[in-house]
Length: 110
Image (tube, rainbow, N blue to C red; front, top):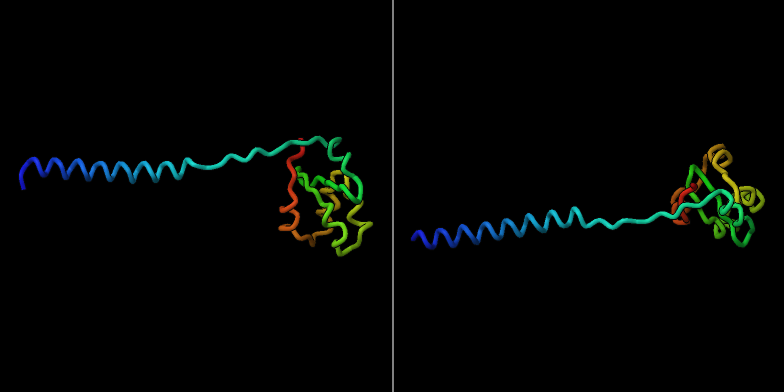
């Protein structure tokens, strides 16, 4: 192989390596930023009806309106958490569908 061919193949290999490195680094840095809205407890309190029920649990806000008719302990129990910070009540009970709750995430408590 001549020196000219060796140089050309070296350049090709370096370009391929640089391309692979670039692609792997761009995948790592290509993360989407999710902006989480912040709400005050006063804002949460305006969502305190059976047709519009938000609750705060551990600093996170959830819209639990669709959960009201499905709640195993009944509508009256879950309605106590509408428009308020229900962390203590929620943690005392223990048995909850956390995945269902996460699906109804609205934002964080200020």
